[in-house]
Length: 206
Image 1 (spheres, helix red, strand yellow):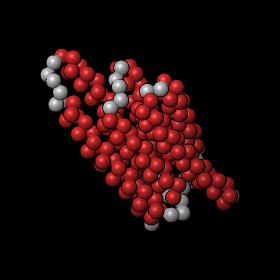
Image 2 (cartoon, one colour):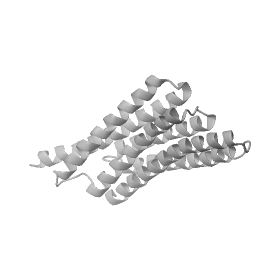
Image 3 (cartoon, one colour):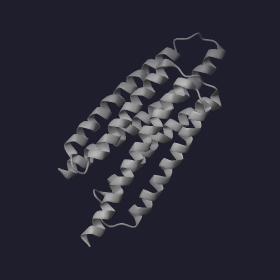
Image 4 (tube, one colour):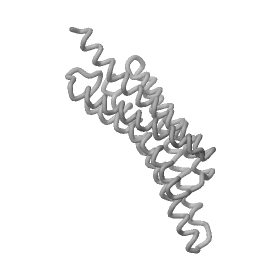
């Protein structure tokens, strides 16, 4: 009986780890797209986001059918949702860029690179939760520090937008660019939320 429960606990950990890994891969693809504007990379990111959605659907299905979980079921659900949102916003960033015909900027690339690093820290934090919770907390804190840097670059990027010429063409371009920046900022917010949940889980476990 214990082995049955143990397998269920391991399954949730495995699914969360898979989600975090996919989010990191998605952020790598976002950086690559911003560097290349390659349509094939955009398609790869779209497929990666769909793969992540499927993992989350499986996790929710398992959550609805399981009594024993490795940590609070609310925390499992919230952490899964936050991580999923990270890759969702990576995908929608590219979608918006294509629809609005927005070209990559150095600010976008700086933000995406920081988001990639933060996604890596979240992934590592998730991996360390079962056996090394204090190490998981360290990774969560690093992720939060990276998210703070994202917000600083975001504010710098928005200020740069408003410093341009005051003509209609520039205003239209400014609105397009700001929409893309907001998607990137939203990804940062969700990453920050995931880091906070990891920290909460560690507090409850120790």
